[in-house]
Image (cartoon, rainbow, N blue to C red; front, side, top):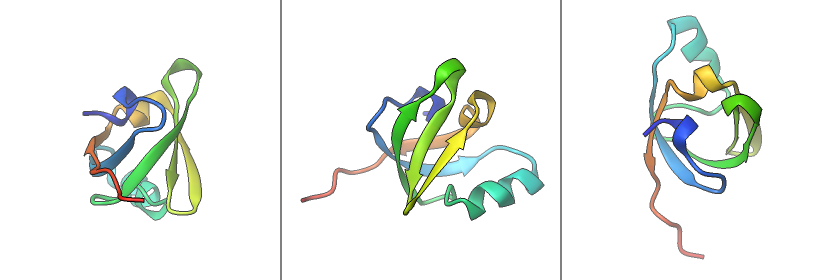
Length: 78
């Protein structure tokens, strides 16, 4: 599933980011690297997505969000 298809509040595990090498390195520096679990906090106008990655919030435009492959993350026990 693509990050752009996720609903608000969903926790997902990043499987990969299909962008050019220079852009992928920057995205990974922001916490969106394979294996990372992120939570969708906001769905912006025109398909943009804001995720919580670690202690940071990362905003992605619609085109980039469509290139982030994810899978549902297992629910954590609280």
